[in-house]
Image (cartoon, rainbow, N blue to C red):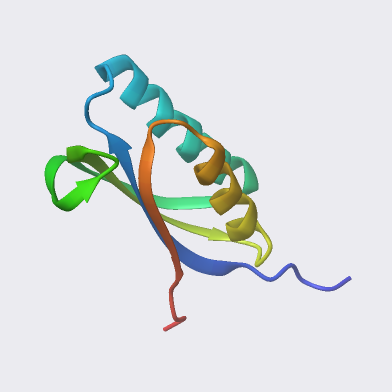
Length: 100
């Protein structure tokens, strides 16, 4: 049986800071649990509320979260789709890390 290929990724997502604290926590948990259900979460780093470099959707602040994980090559496409259809997410990026 062929071994399943797992790539290393990092994702940063910015949540609308004008949301209530409960809503921010819910979005954080939603995406961390989605990632862990489809791969292996290596680390979760909350950067917290920060001023944006430029306005996004008339917002000046966002709540940043960085997640490092391993997953199969098809999962980032689904994660990106979930980000795009979720209200409260201002910006996202998913990058594949080089294997050392």
